[in-house]
Image (cartoon, rainbow, N blue to C red; front, top):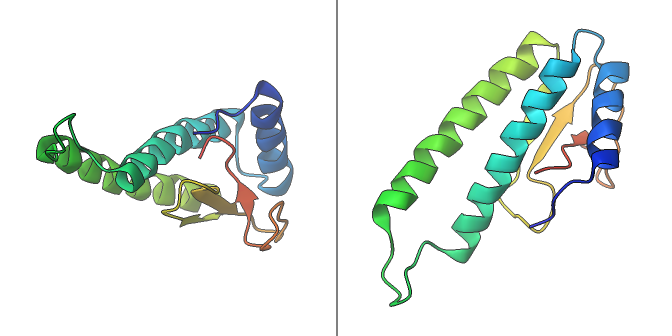
Length: 119
């Protein structure tokens, strides 16, 4: 799992504030926190939830599924409130969350939105 550097977090905050005028620093930091949790969940999904004997931990899986849905709902609501959109990706090898800003600015190769560095 890639941990975002302070510089990456700061750059994301500045890009969001520049390209989404209704966003605040608090909004950007909430997105970063949700991104870190969402990324961990996607990594767990990819690696599986197994104990040392190979038995799946179904309680852990159920908790992560509920948390994943809550994050998706809360991020979608937060993004709507600041005039943005959000897309989710399940592959933890890349960026799992991208924010689409009103002016169409992107910082990813696919031109889909702003990459949330913690995701």
